[in-house]
Amino acid sequence: MKDLCQAVIMAKAREKAAKETRLTAEAALIKAIGPTKIEGTETKAVDGFKISVTTKLNRNLDIGAYQDLQLPENMSFVDFKPSINLKNLRMIERIDPALVAKCITTKPGKPSLKIEGV
Image (cartoon, helix red, strand yellow):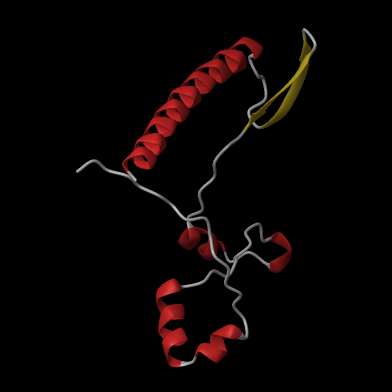
């Protein structure tokens, strides 16, 4: 077990170093290309490589201010998406699991692992 833990820790250290090296190289390449668009993708062919740089703008919504606009349906620019309230879902699952099973599909996610020295 000790060898497996040490193997995971060493692999994570190598992975972190490789990621830092990659991010540094990416930043240098992006700077060298000098994208001109604020948002979108620019593609350049250089020395046998096709390089695409995508720039983005992150946007946050003030829901209250948006709702205060009271826009008509044809001018609406925000989609409200339903999401699962996990606390309420678990409560209903305890009370009536069949009800939840009618509309919720559950499948296992990727497990996570954390190793700490003791």
